[in-house]
Image (cartoon, rainbow, N blue to C red):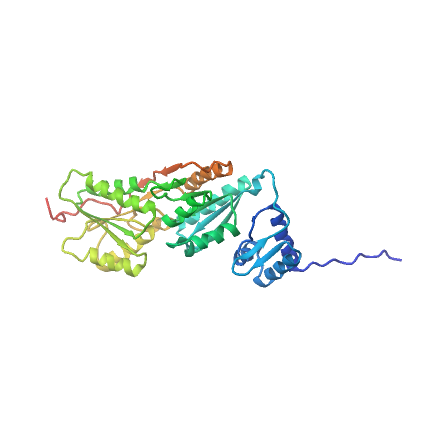
Amino acid sequence: MPSAIPPLRYQSLALQVAARIGAEIEKGAWGTWLPGERALTVSLQTSRKTLRKALAHLQREGIIRTRHGLGHEVVGPAERTGPKALGDFSVGLLTPDSLENLRPYTALWVDELRSLLFETGARLATFSGYRFFTGRPEKALVRLVEQNPQTCWVLAHSNEHIQQWFHTHRVPCVIAGSSHTGLPLPSVDLDNFAVCRHAAGAMLRLGHRRVAFFTKQSQRAGDLEGERGFEDGVRASPHRDIESVIVRHDGTVDHAYRALGRLFGVASPPTAVLVGQSAFYLTTIAFFAERGLRVPSQVSLISREDDTFLSYLKPAPARYSCNPKTYAKRLLMQLQLCFDGETGGHTIHRIEPKFVAGDSLGPVARGAVAKS
């Protein structure tokens, strides 16, 4: 007689997902609360329907408890104790925009940071949403951090309110940017003060006496430092006939166009402009093209930021460049301190970008200076 063939043991997809969640709970990956269902469907690569079946199974097993309006609470097995292995370290990246909507430079350093963390055995989890970046983010942040405990957080494009919450609640974090005054949080940023001060000096040395800083309205500490640097560069000039202005827009193309229209709709417009954000350098170029303004023979331009798409423009933009790999490595250095338990320091890393002297910056046109 042929030998008996043992029956196949089929495990449904929902049970497989439940087993994966249970394994993560046993490792202590999520602490007291599971991540939200949307985050779980992404990380587990499953549908919402399958996930809910898996969660229902875990609830029947007494591993989780669903609390209406709050989420899924872990009630067993007991959280693992003892020293963490490298693979237990997890970094949460929090941004207002989803990754696909971030500027290219930010996406590049995020990818590099993910690779660097992977090499050390750590993980990078990404979270986004404007609800965390409002003037009152407390409830959203409490739920986020309780449901998604991380070894350390990286806060990108953060305002004072979100930084204050992390500082007050002593949640380990590193600011990808600058920390606000009075908030002793570790940070990594480009030296925006030095960049904008240098840009103002570069324009003035070429004979420009009517200069402008065109930038997005912002409450980010690094952007505010840039505005102060521009003003300081103007004040440092020995010339007393300088006219300078900071023009802010709300981050939309329509509002930026209107702001540029007012700036260049006067009898004596600026002859040189520092543009705060690389994307709005494109907006400014388009505006000049419509007005018939030639760069740099009629107006000079400098971009405070660099991005990959700027290298495709003619004339080549004058800009300040920092390799995203350099930025990611500096962030990793700060994160390593979190991994080692050193979360009380206020370490500030400022990276001075390289000035790329493009063709968009030239001497002031003859007769363009209204005052002598």
